[in-house]
Image 1: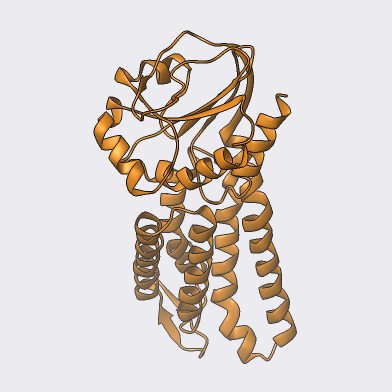
Image 2 (image 1 turned 180 degrees about the vertical axis):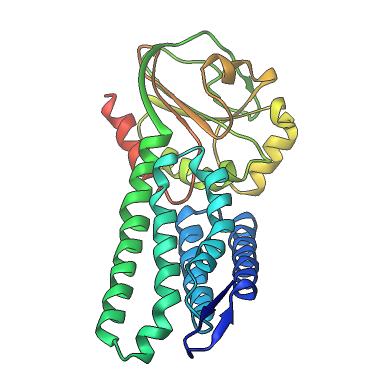
Length: 296
């Protein structure tokens, strides 16, 4: 199939489309390689994707405007984002829409500049930046907090944990005290990313003698008590540690996967469960501390 290019000459777009798909795959590899190796922060994933799609679409636009090429460029990133993120948090779909807009702007960018349509170019770029800022700074953090946190008022099943550290370790709820349990695994990247924030929440409430925190690992994550204690000590985290043999407490409290936090109030009721963590949830510590204080 042939089309007229920007120079008015017939042009075959099959090579352009193949190049678009290749660039799209490369962009996906870069974005998710960084996400796996550096940070899985959804804001970083979105921003990198938007920049790469804009830049590569601009390169494609120099050779001609073919919207099928734009679709092929976006497809690899969108497919991975859908399978890894949207299946868990479907409401994050505006990220793909903004990626599509970034690619579309990139595709026509060179033509707009050549036609000296500077005002139109500036307006669409500014609108993309505004949309991106809203998505990263307001929409994603708020949505993740809503998705991860589940307020409850449920009966607490009986459970007992095995203390891993010396001193006072809450291995079961104490009447009259709030208990905050964080189920953890040393092989879980989101758990490790959440750990400093959870420790900071504990430090912020350290003067509240009726609030107890405990970090819990289990053999379901192939952890051992000694390995777990050593792992936490190397990160200079000072927190009571406990072990959940066979994951019985984890399952009994109705959470799935890790990290998973359970907050038990003074009367022994489960008041909050939350599952998952992403650094894009910027209000995690503030929200957790505020919720615990609200149980007074």
